[in-house]
Length: 477
Picture 1 (cartoon, rainbow, N blue to C red):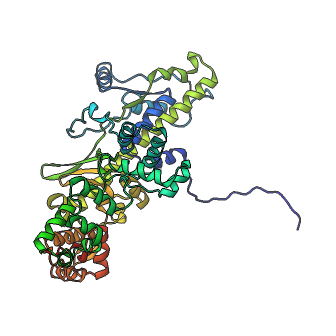
Picture 2 (cartoon, rainbow, N blue to C red):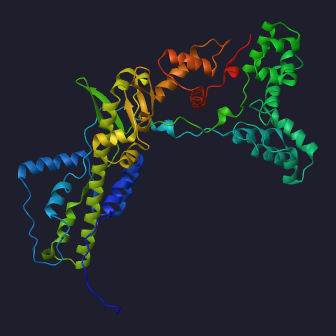
Picture 3 (tube, one colour):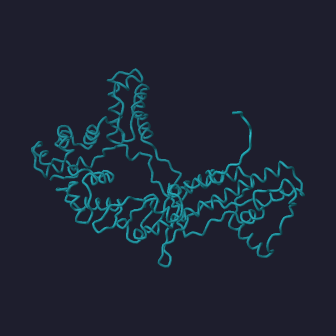
C-alpha cells in the first residue's frame, strides 16, 4: 500500500488546564496570609496592578455619580493590533475603577500590640553557656562544657555518651565527668542528666532529700513507682501507705523535663478565614478579608492601547499581556472567595446542631456531601478546607474538623466519630481513679448510650486522645 498525505477533520473532547484555571486552582488552598503575600508580589511584578484605599474607591464612586458613565474610547476596530480576547470596556468597567472589593465583614478584634511579638526568649543553650562562662575558667573545661551543652536535647537531657564526648576533642573521660558534674549543678536543676532517674535524683539532692526514703524509691523501686504499686512500695520502704504516698507526691512535683521552660514553642494564634455569626436566628458565613490588599487595574495605562495616541506595537502588546494577567488574577481571587463562601455556607447547613449545642451534636459528614450540595467536585472542596479556619459560636475550628465518619446508633441515626471520642473522654474523666475502666467496660457504657463499638475501636480512639491504659491510670493508695 502506497503512502500518501491527506487532510482530515476530527472532533474530540479533552480537558485542558488553561493558565487562568491553573491560577484559580493554585489560589484555592492558600491561607489568607499566603494570598496576601501573593497579591503584594503581583503588585510588584505587574505595573498595571495597583493597590487602592477605601477612600480612593469612595471618591471614584462619587465622581462616577456626578459625571455619569465614562465615554467609550475611540479605538478603531479595523486596526490589527486591537485586543481580541474580549470586550475591552467590559474588563475595564468591571476591574478598572473598583478592582477587587473585599466583601463586608463583621467587627473583628484588634491584633495584639506589636511589642508583644518582637521579644525573643533565651534558649536553654544560651542560658547554660552564660553560666558555664562564669563557673569554668580554664579553656579546656570551657570547651568540654560547650560540647556537653551542644549535645543536650530540647528537654535538657545529654544524648551523647562520655566516650563520644571524649572523641570530639581528645579529652579523657575523668575530666569530662568532672565538667559534667559542674554542668549538672547549673540552673535548671536536673539538666545534662542521662536518664529520667538521674534527672530526678539531681533535683532531690538539690532539695536536700539525700539518703531518705524518697531517694531510695528512685534508686531501688522505679518499676513500682512507674506502675503506681503503692502498697508494694510501702512494703519495700517498710513504711505506711500514707507515708509512702507523701514520698511519691514529692517525686511527682519534680520536673521530668528541665529544659521545658526554655523551649521556643509559642502559642500560634489562628486568624480565622471565615466568621460564623447569627443574624435574625440564622447562621451566616462572613469571609475575613481584613488585611487583603484591594487591587485594580491602573487607568493610566488605557492610553497605551490606543494606537492613535502613539506608542509602539511592542508597548501595546506588553500592556495587553499585563492587563490579561491582571484580569485573570482578579477573577481568580473573586472566584476563590465565592467558593469559600459556598463551602462555609454548606458546612453551616449540615452542622447547625453543632453550632447550637456543641461537639456532642456534631454530624457525620464527608466531602461528597458538601460537593453535591454546592455543585462542585470533591477535590475543589478538599482544596478549600485545607488550612482554613472558621470562627464559630463554639470556638475556632479548622474547616476539615467538620468532616468525620459516621457511627451507627441503635436509634437508626448516625453519630460523628468526634462525638464518640468526646464521650470517651467524659467517661474517663468521671471514672474512679482507684478502679479505672478498661476498654471492655467503656464498650459497655457506650452500649447503654446506644453506641455499639468493638473494643479495638475504643482502644484506637483512646490512643488518639492520648489516654493511657487502665493500668496506667490506676492510682493505688
